[in-house]
Image (cartoon, rainbow, N blue to C red):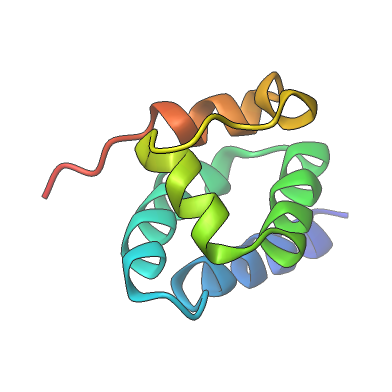
Length: 89
């Protein structure tokens, strides 16, 4: 299971750096670098599903606080980490 989890973590980190929107590549990529290595399997699967099913613009606006996160996503621990994350160069 550990090998599968490590493979999934690498996949999600790669996907986070290659979203298709440069701003998200930087922001979500930095988030993934910081938090994905310690995510458990459930949180990792939730985050990967979010990346696969959410429009890049929506995700960006939620992270920077331009638009409120939908209620069905807002209370998830990973979403709270995403919206609280600040990239400090």
